[in-house]
Image (cartoon, rainbow over all chains, first blue to last red; front, side):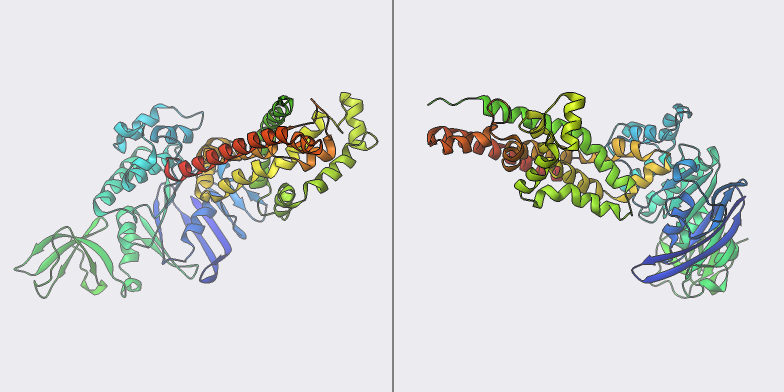
Length: 283
Length: 226
């Protein structure tokens, strides 16, 4: 179990935010933490990483405390078994792709994992290139490989797909799935995008004004009224113009919805916004 | 017209030793200020102390050093007892004075470059299990190499151009403390304008070359790869 309770007063441009969050998550699960901008999502990840101390609370994984304000335990990031994928990738510009991965390795780790990871992210041929010569998607994949290379107990992903185009998203999503199958770990991913959450996670936690408003399986959370106003993004898989039915992929689940007119209909493969009342699970 | 090369040689020697010593103490000092004094009230104080020589008249700094180096003083007498070295009117004395006087020229460019790097490099290194010391030398410093070169060059050039502090604590002793800048003053005092002219010209050309090099390096820093 990953158990945590954080209480922290955050200061940002919009003012102050009191973050209060308590939850238990099963090990080796993937949880998406969702919320708008300024909800303290990145700060939350930093609290897990030990880069930002909570005012009060605790954090324990496998019954080992990493943080406990009562008994004054606060492990620095170096002593926590974590991997952190930064929104800005944070690859070290002075090192090549391979050197970035090598630098990340602990002495006890086997070096063969570097070549293994390079082939998973399909960057073996660019191993000796400096990061600034890579595309955004390639940099993101290197950053992901670097985050998992120490085989951490907790993997923290900050908006892993948001900066990428559709093709790159699919690619990274696939890489992430392969990597997590090979090196299972507990994952927390922060996002403001329903699709990203649906695509990657088992659980979704929705934050609003620093508090948890919803928590549950992806289908349970995304099917609730909460999202009525915003709807959910999905990818069009098939269009039946005669029966006027669309099949839309939301996360790993297929939905069908009807449409009134064929005019202005997007093409297959495009992303569309579905309203909740339009949903009907395709069983 | 014949001039003695000893002052030029002495200036070069002083500047070289000063720069080397500044590199050895400057980097750990930057490390200390950036990593260990973060979020403490001591940090602005230490930064202010390092920068003091920028605003103090050299005579003020020279005066305090003269008082401190005096053989009757604690520092001066300790040095004499331990190393059999006299600090006033000696090369060792002006070397220590130069190190203090040029400290901001080494520390400030490196520190401000480190502080302008995005915080996520440091955070990323920590999440990869690296200590702040490893992060400093393996991640931060290699990405600001150009600023280290600028710091080294400015320290060297500034020491070559130093006058007030050296005159206060070193006086004007040939082959010991009479560096090029002092020699110019000395030649003028003795109305040897031709010699003064030559020394001045050499220093002028040298300074111009150094600043051109620094500017070239700064431009490289902005266009070249990190």
